[in-house]
Figure 1 (cartoon, rainbow, N blue to C red):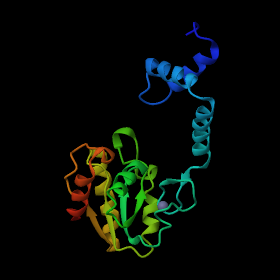
Figure 2 (tube, rainbow, N blue to C red):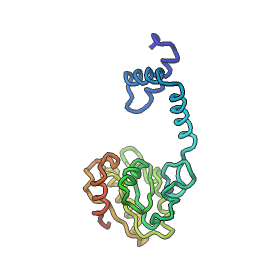
Figure 3 (cartoon, rainbow, N blue to C red):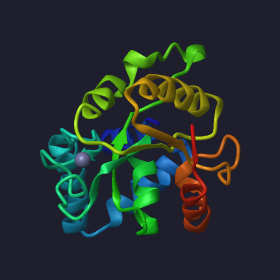
Figure 4 (spheres, rainbow, N blue to C red):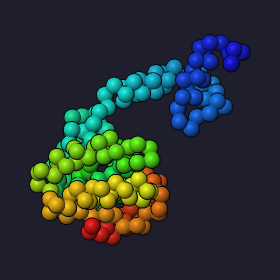
Length: 198
Ligand code: ZN
């Protein structure tokens, strides 16, 4: 890419590090950015830096947030006795968009996958078990319906069963292998309402 001046090449190179951005798209974005009003570019850059610097795990549910306690855990009107276990913060966002779930969440940040060498100790499972020492009525397992998601659901239900806390799994309205974040709200709600006790 020596035919561009080095600063343009550098921008293209940095943009192409992003997932799903190939060399051509990176080039297109780079030229778009160069033509944007300076102020807009500054806002964009500082949004990236601020998010990276300030976003951390909620100390209770482990979702990504810029506060010690995320807005959901900090909301007194949510039912803290119902915990929905999801794989990612994006899955949490998918359920939040339905606007119908009143409980709280627990974000695992992954799923158990023997194939990829991801074990129970690599996701926020110990943290979930610690939360169950408190006052919890039900744990709804809403991991994806992929092999990893199902493996994780089975593992969690076996761990929780002896505690006597109700464990349920969202219904299979969610297509097999389907990522929760791509599923429409109606299907998500149906899956939640049709959950079965494990
Ligand atoms: Zn939280």
